[in-house]
Length: 330
Figure (cartoon, helix red, strand yellow):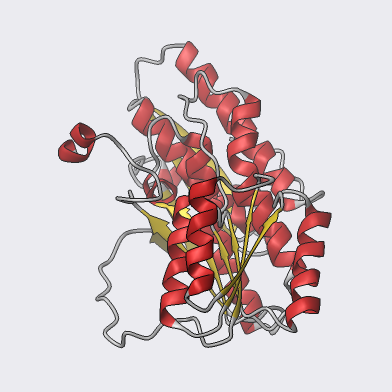
Protein backbone atom coordinates (compact mmCIF):
# COMPACT_ATOMS: atom_id res chain seq x y z
CA UNK A 1 0.00 0.00 0.00
CA UNK A 2 1.39 3.38 -0.97
CA UNK A 3 0.22 5.90 1.60
CA UNK A 4 -0.10 9.58 0.76
CA UNK A 5 1.82 10.64 3.89
CA UNK A 6 4.38 13.00 2.38
CA UNK A 7 5.70 14.41 5.65
CA UNK A 8 3.82 17.67 5.21
CA UNK A 9 0.81 18.97 7.12
CA UNK A 10 -0.35 17.97 10.60
CA UNK A 11 0.35 14.35 11.55
CA UNK A 12 -3.31 13.83 12.49
CA UNK A 13 -4.30 14.67 8.90
CA UNK A 14 -1.66 12.33 7.49
CA UNK A 15 -2.82 9.54 9.79
CA UNK A 16 -6.43 10.01 8.68
CA UNK A 17 -5.39 10.18 5.02
CA UNK A 18 -3.58 6.85 5.32
CA UNK A 19 -6.56 5.30 7.09
CA UNK A 20 -8.81 6.52 4.26
CA UNK A 21 -6.43 5.06 1.67
CA UNK A 22 -6.32 1.69 3.42
CA UNK A 23 -10.11 1.74 3.72
CA UNK A 24 -10.39 2.30 -0.04
CA UNK A 25 -7.98 -0.56 -0.78
CA UNK A 26 -9.74 -2.97 1.56
CA UNK A 27 -13.16 -2.01 0.19
CA UNK A 28 -12.00 -2.56 -3.38
CA UNK A 29 -10.57 -5.98 -2.55
CA UNK A 30 -13.77 -7.02 -0.77
CA UNK A 31 -15.91 -5.96 -3.71
CA UNK A 32 -13.65 -7.90 -6.06
CA UNK A 33 -14.45 -10.99 -3.95
CA UNK A 34 -10.90 -12.25 -3.79
CA UNK A 35 -10.82 -16.05 -3.53
CA UNK A 36 -7.15 -16.33 -2.60
CA UNK A 37 -5.20 -14.87 0.28
CA UNK A 38 -4.26 -11.24 -0.27
CA UNK A 39 -1.57 -9.38 1.66
CA UNK A 40 -1.56 -5.60 2.17
CA UNK A 41 1.81 -4.21 3.26
CA UNK A 42 2.30 -0.70 4.63
CA UNK A 43 5.87 0.58 4.88
CA UNK A 44 6.42 3.09 7.70
CA UNK A 45 9.59 4.96 8.75
CA UNK A 46 11.05 3.72 12.02
CA UNK A 47 11.85 7.20 13.33
CA UNK A 48 10.54 10.74 13.20
CA UNK A 49 6.98 11.92 13.51
CA UNK A 50 5.66 9.60 10.81
CA UNK A 51 6.48 6.48 12.81
CA UNK A 52 3.10 6.91 14.55
CA UNK A 53 1.60 5.62 11.28
CA UNK A 54 2.48 2.18 12.67
CA UNK A 55 -0.80 2.41 14.58
CA UNK A 56 -2.61 1.61 11.34
CA UNK A 57 -1.73 -2.04 11.96
CA UNK A 58 -4.92 -2.12 14.06
CA UNK A 59 -6.95 -1.16 10.99
CA UNK A 60 -5.41 -4.02 9.02
CA UNK A 61 -5.94 -6.48 11.89
CA UNK A 62 -9.62 -5.51 11.89
CA UNK A 63 -9.79 -6.00 8.10
CA UNK A 64 -8.44 -9.54 8.60
CA UNK A 65 -11.02 -10.27 11.31
CA UNK A 66 -13.82 -9.06 9.04
CA UNK A 67 -12.45 -10.82 5.94
CA UNK A 68 -10.05 -13.70 6.83
CA UNK A 69 -8.58 -13.88 3.31
CA UNK A 70 -7.16 -10.37 3.74
CA UNK A 71 -3.90 -10.06 5.64
CA UNK A 72 -2.13 -6.88 6.62
CA UNK A 73 1.38 -5.94 7.68
CA UNK A 74 2.94 -2.72 8.90
CA UNK A 75 6.69 -2.81 8.36
CA UNK A 76 8.92 -0.22 10.01
CA UNK A 77 12.30 0.35 8.43
CA UNK A 78 15.00 2.99 7.99
CA UNK A 79 13.62 5.57 5.53
CA UNK A 80 17.17 6.22 4.27
CA UNK A 81 17.51 2.69 2.91
CA UNK A 82 17.65 2.22 -0.82
CA UNK A 83 14.50 1.36 -2.73
CA UNK A 84 15.88 -2.08 -3.60
CA UNK A 85 16.66 -2.83 0.06
CA UNK A 86 13.15 -1.82 1.13
CA UNK A 87 11.69 -3.93 -1.66
CA UNK A 88 13.69 -6.92 -0.39
CA UNK A 89 12.15 -6.42 3.03
CA UNK A 90 8.64 -6.37 1.57
CA UNK A 91 9.36 -9.60 -0.28
CA UNK A 92 10.88 -11.21 2.84
CA UNK A 93 7.74 -10.55 4.87
CA UNK A 94 5.37 -12.00 2.28
CA UNK A 95 6.24 -15.45 3.62
CA UNK A 96 4.84 -14.50 7.05
CA UNK A 97 1.46 -12.88 6.34
CA UNK A 98 0.18 -13.72 9.83
CA UNK A 99 2.79 -11.40 11.41
CA UNK A 100 1.11 -8.01 11.42
CA UNK A 101 3.78 -5.75 12.95
CA UNK A 102 7.45 -5.94 11.96
CA UNK A 103 10.32 -3.56 12.66
CA UNK A 104 13.93 -3.66 11.46
CA UNK A 105 16.57 -2.49 13.92
CA UNK A 106 20.35 -2.74 13.50
CA UNK A 107 19.90 -5.29 10.74
CA UNK A 108 17.60 -7.48 12.83
CA UNK A 109 13.99 -8.32 12.01
CA UNK A 110 11.76 -7.86 15.08
CA UNK A 111 8.14 -9.01 15.36
CA UNK A 112 5.74 -7.50 17.88
CA UNK A 113 4.29 -10.01 20.29
CA UNK A 114 2.68 -10.24 23.72
CA UNK A 115 4.43 -10.94 27.00
CA UNK A 116 3.13 -11.22 30.54
CA UNK A 117 4.14 -8.64 33.12
CA UNK A 118 3.50 -9.27 36.82
CA UNK A 119 1.23 -6.80 38.58
CA UNK A 120 3.07 -4.18 40.66
CA UNK A 121 2.93 -4.87 44.39
CA UNK A 122 3.72 -1.42 45.80
CA UNK A 123 0.14 -0.14 45.95
CA UNK A 124 1.41 3.34 45.04
CA UNK A 125 -0.95 5.72 43.24
CA UNK A 126 0.04 8.47 40.78
CA UNK A 127 -2.18 11.16 42.34
CA UNK A 128 -1.18 13.31 45.29
CA UNK A 129 -2.74 15.56 47.92
CA UNK A 130 -3.81 18.94 46.53
CA UNK A 131 -3.00 17.74 43.01
CA UNK A 132 -4.69 19.38 40.02
CA UNK A 133 -5.93 16.95 37.37
CA UNK A 134 -7.62 17.27 34.01
CA UNK A 135 -9.91 14.43 32.91
CA UNK A 136 -11.17 14.67 29.33
CA UNK A 137 -14.34 12.75 28.66
CA UNK A 138 -14.68 13.18 32.40
CA UNK A 139 -18.46 13.38 32.33
CA UNK A 140 -18.63 9.86 30.91
CA UNK A 141 -18.74 6.71 32.98
CA UNK A 142 -15.03 5.88 33.19
CA UNK A 143 -14.10 9.52 33.74
CA UNK A 144 -16.38 9.74 36.75
CA UNK A 145 -15.06 6.44 38.10
CA UNK A 146 -11.52 7.84 37.99
CA UNK A 147 -12.59 11.15 39.48
CA UNK A 148 -14.11 9.21 42.38
CA UNK A 149 -10.95 7.11 42.67
CA UNK A 150 -8.71 10.18 42.92
CA UNK A 151 -10.99 11.91 45.42
CA UNK A 152 -11.06 8.80 47.62
CA UNK A 153 -7.27 8.40 47.69
CA UNK A 154 -5.94 11.93 48.21
CA UNK A 155 -6.94 15.11 50.03
CA UNK A 156 -8.11 18.38 48.50
CA UNK A 157 -7.61 17.39 44.87
CA UNK A 158 -8.82 19.70 42.12
CA UNK A 159 -10.58 17.75 39.36
CA UNK A 160 -11.36 19.51 36.08
CA UNK A 161 -13.71 17.34 34.05
CA UNK A 162 -14.44 18.11 30.41
CA UNK A 163 -16.96 16.76 27.93
CA UNK A 164 -18.94 17.70 24.86
CA UNK A 165 -22.22 18.26 26.73
CA UNK A 166 -22.99 21.87 27.61
CA UNK A 167 -24.51 20.76 30.91
CA UNK A 168 -24.59 17.55 32.95
CA UNK A 169 -27.72 15.56 33.68
CA UNK A 170 -28.99 15.25 37.24
CA UNK A 171 -27.36 11.88 37.92
CA UNK A 172 -23.88 13.07 36.92
CA UNK A 173 -24.37 16.38 38.71
CA UNK A 174 -25.29 14.49 41.88
CA UNK A 175 -22.13 12.35 41.63
CA UNK A 176 -20.02 15.51 41.29
CA UNK A 177 -21.68 17.01 44.36
CA UNK A 178 -20.84 13.88 46.33
CA UNK A 179 -17.22 14.24 45.21
CA UNK A 180 -17.13 17.80 46.47
CA UNK A 181 -18.65 16.68 49.78
CA UNK A 182 -15.69 14.32 50.17
CA UNK A 183 -13.29 17.26 50.03
CA UNK A 184 -12.34 17.48 46.35
CA UNK A 185 -12.94 20.57 44.28
CA UNK A 186 -14.71 19.50 41.10
CA UNK A 187 -15.22 21.65 38.02
CA UNK A 188 -16.97 20.74 34.77
CA UNK A 189 -16.14 22.58 31.56
CA UNK A 190 -17.71 21.83 28.16
CA UNK A 191 -14.76 21.54 25.77
CA UNK A 192 -14.36 19.83 22.42
CA UNK A 193 -10.86 18.32 22.53
CA UNK A 194 -10.65 18.44 18.73
CA UNK A 195 -10.74 22.26 18.92
CA UNK A 196 -7.09 23.22 19.37
CA UNK A 197 -7.75 26.80 20.46
CA UNK A 198 -10.28 25.63 23.06
CA UNK A 199 -7.82 23.06 24.46
CA UNK A 200 -5.01 25.61 24.69
CA UNK A 201 -7.35 28.01 26.49
CA UNK A 202 -8.44 25.20 28.85
CA UNK A 203 -4.90 24.25 29.87
CA UNK A 204 -3.86 27.88 30.24
CA UNK A 205 -6.95 28.64 32.31
CA UNK A 206 -6.30 25.74 34.68
CA UNK A 207 -2.75 26.96 35.29
CA UNK A 208 -3.84 30.53 35.83
CA UNK A 209 -6.60 29.60 38.28
CA UNK A 210 -4.89 26.82 40.21
CA UNK A 211 -1.21 27.61 39.72
CA UNK A 212 -0.37 24.21 38.28
CA UNK A 213 -1.53 21.14 36.38
CA UNK A 214 -0.17 17.87 37.71
CA UNK A 215 -1.66 15.26 35.43
CA UNK A 216 -3.92 14.58 32.45
CA UNK A 217 -6.20 11.59 31.89
CA UNK A 218 -7.41 11.57 28.30
CA UNK A 219 -10.58 9.48 28.20
CA UNK A 220 -12.60 11.28 25.53
CA UNK A 221 -13.95 9.08 22.74
CA UNK A 222 -16.97 8.08 20.70
CA UNK A 223 -17.96 4.96 18.79
CA UNK A 224 -19.76 4.55 15.47
CA UNK A 225 -19.45 0.84 14.70
CA UNK A 226 -19.68 -0.36 11.14
CA UNK A 227 -17.85 -2.84 8.95
CA UNK A 228 -15.16 -1.39 6.68
CA UNK A 229 -17.25 -2.10 3.60
CA UNK A 230 -20.08 0.06 4.97
CA UNK A 231 -18.29 2.64 7.07
CA UNK A 232 -18.59 6.20 5.81
CA UNK A 233 -15.80 8.75 5.84
CA UNK A 234 -17.75 10.81 8.36
CA UNK A 235 -18.09 7.82 10.73
CA UNK A 236 -14.36 7.16 10.56
CA UNK A 237 -13.44 10.81 11.15
CA UNK A 238 -15.93 11.13 14.02
CA UNK A 239 -14.44 8.11 15.80
CA UNK A 240 -10.80 8.98 15.18
CA UNK A 241 -10.82 12.71 15.92
CA UNK A 242 -11.10 12.71 19.77
CA UNK A 243 -8.36 10.12 20.20
CA UNK A 244 -6.01 11.33 17.47
CA UNK A 245 -6.49 15.07 17.05
CA UNK A 246 -7.67 15.45 20.66
CA UNK A 247 -4.53 13.77 21.97
CA UNK A 248 -2.22 15.91 19.85
CA UNK A 249 -4.05 19.08 20.92
CA UNK A 250 -3.67 18.18 24.60
CA UNK A 251 -0.02 17.25 24.22
CA UNK A 252 0.81 20.45 22.36
CA UNK A 253 -1.14 22.58 24.85
CA UNK A 254 0.68 20.99 27.81
CA UNK A 255 4.13 20.52 26.27
CA UNK A 256 5.71 23.07 28.64
CA UNK A 257 3.72 21.99 31.72
CA UNK A 258 5.57 20.04 34.44
CA UNK A 259 3.22 17.06 34.46
CA UNK A 260 3.61 14.02 36.70
CA UNK A 261 1.80 11.86 34.16
CA UNK A 262 -0.21 11.82 30.96
CA UNK A 263 -2.53 8.77 30.91
CA UNK A 264 -4.32 7.78 27.71
CA UNK A 265 -7.42 5.60 27.71
CA UNK A 266 -6.94 3.27 24.77
CA UNK A 267 -8.74 0.01 24.09
CA UNK A 268 -7.90 -3.64 23.56
CA UNK A 269 -9.21 -3.06 20.02
CA UNK A 270 -6.05 -1.01 19.40
CA UNK A 271 -3.86 -4.03 20.10
CA UNK A 272 -5.93 -6.76 18.50
CA UNK A 273 -8.40 -5.12 16.12
CA UNK A 274 -12.14 -5.71 16.43
CA UNK A 275 -14.79 -6.48 13.79
CA UNK A 276 -16.90 -3.42 13.03
CA UNK A 277 -14.40 -1.07 14.68
CA UNK A 278 -11.61 -0.46 12.17
CA UNK A 279 -11.55 3.31 12.72
CA UNK A 280 -11.89 2.92 16.48
CA UNK A 281 -9.06 0.36 16.55
CA UNK A 282 -6.79 2.62 14.49
CA UNK A 283 -7.59 5.58 16.75
CA UNK A 284 -6.70 3.65 19.90
CA UNK A 285 -3.54 2.20 18.36
CA UNK A 286 -2.52 5.76 17.53
CA UNK A 287 -2.67 6.51 21.25
CA UNK A 288 -0.40 3.54 21.94
CA UNK A 289 2.30 4.56 19.45
CA UNK A 290 1.99 8.23 20.40
CA UNK A 291 2.58 7.32 24.06
CA UNK A 292 5.89 5.73 23.07
CA UNK A 293 6.77 8.81 21.03
CA UNK A 294 5.94 11.15 23.92
CA UNK A 295 8.10 9.13 26.32
CA UNK A 296 10.98 9.58 23.88
CA UNK A 297 10.33 13.33 23.96
CA UNK A 298 10.44 13.18 27.77
CA UNK A 299 13.87 11.53 27.58
CA UNK A 300 14.96 14.39 25.29
CA UNK A 301 13.64 16.95 27.81
CA UNK A 302 10.98 18.16 25.36
CA UNK A 303 8.10 16.96 27.58
CA UNK A 304 7.64 15.96 31.21
CA UNK A 305 5.74 13.21 33.00
CA UNK A 306 5.41 9.49 32.31
CA UNK A 307 3.05 8.68 29.45
CA UNK A 308 0.97 5.52 29.71
CA UNK A 309 -1.58 4.18 27.22
CA UNK A 310 -3.94 1.65 28.82
CA UNK A 311 -5.69 -0.82 26.49
CA UNK A 312 -8.86 -1.22 28.52
CA UNK A 313 -11.02 -4.28 27.81
CA UNK A 314 -14.72 -4.24 28.72
CA UNK A 315 -15.87 -2.42 31.86
CA UNK A 316 -18.59 -3.76 34.13
CA UNK A 317 -19.68 -0.17 34.78
CA UNK A 318 -19.10 3.06 32.96
CA UNK A 319 -17.32 1.95 29.84
CA UNK A 320 -17.84 -0.25 26.80
CA UNK A 321 -20.34 -2.89 27.82
CA UNK A 322 -21.97 -5.86 26.10
CA UNK A 323 -25.08 -7.87 26.79
CA UNK A 324 -24.88 -10.81 29.21
CA UNK A 325 -24.92 -13.46 26.48
CA UNK A 326 -21.96 -11.89 24.68
CA UNK A 327 -20.12 -11.55 27.99
CA UNK A 328 -20.73 -15.26 28.71
CA UNK A 329 -19.39 -16.27 25.29
CA UNK A 330 -16.29 -14.13 25.71
